[in-house]
Length: 211
Image 1 (cartoon, rainbow, N blue to C red):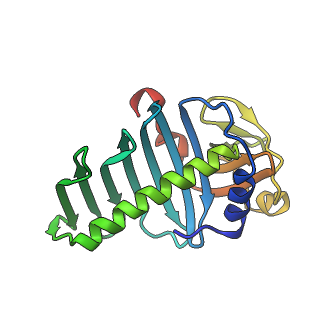
Image 2 (image 1 turned 135 degrees about the vertical axis):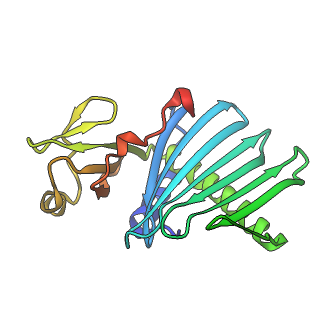
């Protein structure tokens, strides 16, 4: 899930910004080379973080949802669910010393072995996503979602009617469909469409109380 040019630009801008005063529960995201990544995050304490990422490929392939949990600056849980024709899960648990206490991978209901390299790769992915989340939030790159209305405006998942001034507005208007789900990014540098789909993003958007 490499970052697109737009996402890299946002991260460069974020690196020049001081960390803003944001709520404990936030949503952000970015455009990757082959799909979109949406990130929800909850900071329970200064050193306890829960991240959930949803990767949606442009090709319409399997959506990948991953939960990461850190306590005292250490990754203690990793859980990935892959949808599609060959659904799968990966579950890792770590103790406070960083030792692996549980691991399991299943594909199409069959258990598969995980190598030490596999575990190291998942740990690297977790640290990378935490750094990306830090940078996006430092630059106030925030995710919004909703559904198109017949008026051309968007009813956001929080019930607010919005009319974002997209940087790529002409292209967005061509793709607009009443009732379609839409996700976009808002930042000081502009407003960028993230994805348009037939599904209702509000039906699966995490709620703070349940996160």
